[in-house]
Amino acid sequence: MDQWRPIPAHVTQRVVDLRRAIHRRPELGFEEHETAALVEGELAALGISHRRVAGTGVVGVVRGARGGRVVALRADMDALPIDERTGLAYASEVPGRMHACGHDAHTAMLLGAARVLAADREHLRGSVVLLFQPAEEGPGGAAPMLEAGVLDDPPVDAAAMLHVDARLPAGTLGITPGPVCAAADEFGIVVRGRGGHGAYPHTALDAIPAAAAMVLALQNIAARETDPLRSVVLTIGTIEGGYRNNVIADTVRMTGTLRAHDPDLREGLEPKVRRILLGIAAAYGVEVDVEVIRGYPPVVNDRFLAEEFSRVVSGNGIPVIAAEPTMGAEDFAYFAQRVPGLMMRLGIRNEALGTVHSGHSPLFALDEAALPVGIAALVGFVRWATTLPEYSR
Image (cartoon, rainbow, N blue to C red; front, side):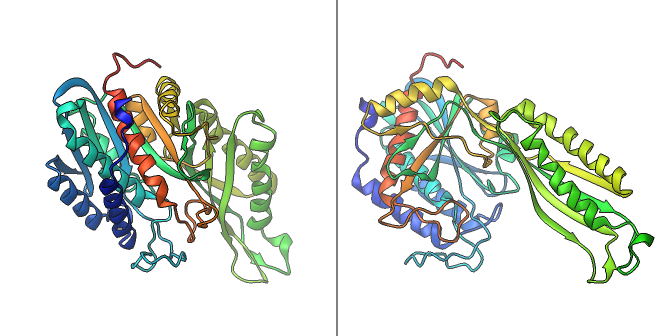
């Protein structure tokens, strides 16, 4: 099919160069000033109209000469607060900052797709909205971009994105209908007892054993209160309490995360947490407060887009894997709630190169030979989806 012409070598080389430049200068969420400026410079050189949104977000629009649908492509730009330990020649030059999740590649591939599509405007049907998003790792850049109207002018019919994935062989695409990422909510727990001398425990209300009982009992939500064929995660990530070895703690603080793919299951987690905590607090004679902070919703791929585009991709020589959903979170979920959405995984695993480490690792690296496959997938999605007569869920 015409949309799967090979990506020109000069485009691939430009994408590699851009990715390495971004990798050297990683920036955290809503601090992506250099990265946004780099994106703006590339779009300007390609003659693509663009504007700033949400502080450091950039939106560009490539308008085709022929009528058709409007499709959005999204790439995230932010890095993580990690010290890089890859030893790469283009490793991070900023202490305590690293592109450890592949967002540098996402941004560079979207710029490569923009280059291909801009050069083919006269044959392009419809339009493509290029979304360069800040702060995916937190506090979340998708919602502010949506509030700025990025899907409204022009009105977007469908949205897609790529995320690199070290689980999949380099150069493959992972496309899965339905849920692909989990909702991610945070919680904080404060257990309040009554302090005292460690030699006289009967005169105090020890918050530590009460907290220990709470940690163990909360695991029953996944182990005994959830259908084992449905996914839920409850993790206690931090616990802090006490003063010294011979002092009974009056307060313990804990934080954690709740994750689920199913929206209904997600809604039921907080009431279960509160019931268990209040019951144990009563049994131990202490008080407990809990706060749940709603995070990103689950990413749910539009089934029609996922199933049909999988056929298109595999029919054009790119291996497609029905990648297992993960319990990780992605704020592309907000875009996929507004319009039919498709989150694709780009395999980057190459054991010979050592690109086997998962995202958020200080050793994370990727096989750059996979980048032209990612560019082709983005370009192919635009050329395919802009011609669809209708989208069906």
